[in-house]
Image (cartoon, rainbow, N blue to C red; front, top):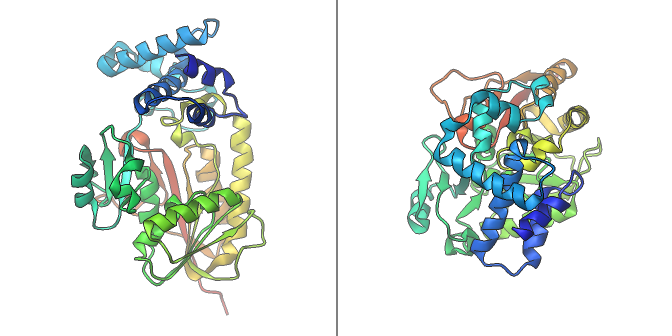
Length: 372
């Protein structure tokens, strides 16, 4: 409890709880089980913060949060819809999105752990790891329900899977890159989607990955080596009009920086540090990134915009502004990865209560040939 209380005390807008937690656990001499208990306590504190008395010591509030989490798990009907919505979501969110009871309830449950197996290897991987449940919609997705350290498994060391949220996996499937094509993952981060695109391309064709942070690209290099992905090139890009390459791509994925509202189940601390001002600032960044990325899309090529947030300013409003600014890009209707029986959608909203993963918004356009 003392370590968890210290993490909570040190956490702030400038120092997110998950980063503080990683630093504390790195320095603490704890068993894997003890470290897991500390992590759960910290995240439960922020998940149930709306029910806690801020005047009480952190240790006492930690105990109360754990009791609330246990009560919610065993007897969820002891909570009301009104209580869940009022205490689990900051008030400003209602100005920017539809706050449904279903979404609010989902935020209070512990997140599920999703794996992405290499193409065609899901059943073999499930047998090797055990404690896995296959997704009924995404062919390579597995939910892991066991307790072993996945990073120490032979399957991980051989690059047979990545830990990747199921909504993030859906983005790669929506991109639908083909072997031999040229694609650019413009905001690649540590490369989760880059590796997925590479796998879908069967390591054939050209794949660029860029990010503004060099350390993230170094992490991608490590991950790519383990995964056996060798058809990519990495380059720094600060998001400006000066692109990292003059290549014209069949597809560009812009998984833009965002407020992360879609990750609030997994990252409850962010509920209490994100503001409306953040949303407005990030929406402006997203529009500029899209405007700069269009130059890399060849005629007939596709531009995919994805964000793990659900606010109107960062989703529909960004897409509508792009439609007006770039009429040579025609909006594409997209099949819903989790509801393939439904007609294609103009925009895709992936809600946690429907997918079991993060919230995600996806829009896509195709560049029309230049007029003569």
